[in-house]
Length: 125
Image (cartoon, rainbow, N blue to C red):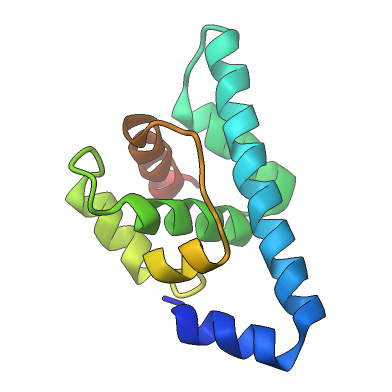
């Protein structure tokens, strides 16, 4: 898992790379939120469909990174399952809570929905 030291190293090496990373992660987190909201509006609210659409749009590895980073930021919340918190912590490309905060990666997704999305991402084939 990536830490604030990783974020600082990216920033120190290249501000352009840092801001591209930050913007990309922010965009992807918002996109995930939009896809979830689309599912809810359509009355489906199926995390498997949300993850399938999200992974198709940005790629599986990037989808895992974003979802795991969001889970790492909420792992302390009792609505995030231990299994998903452990999965997120084991994702090498994901950022830990402090690094996610430094990059300002946040979501409006309710922790229960986020947990369901993480489960769907873990099981995504």
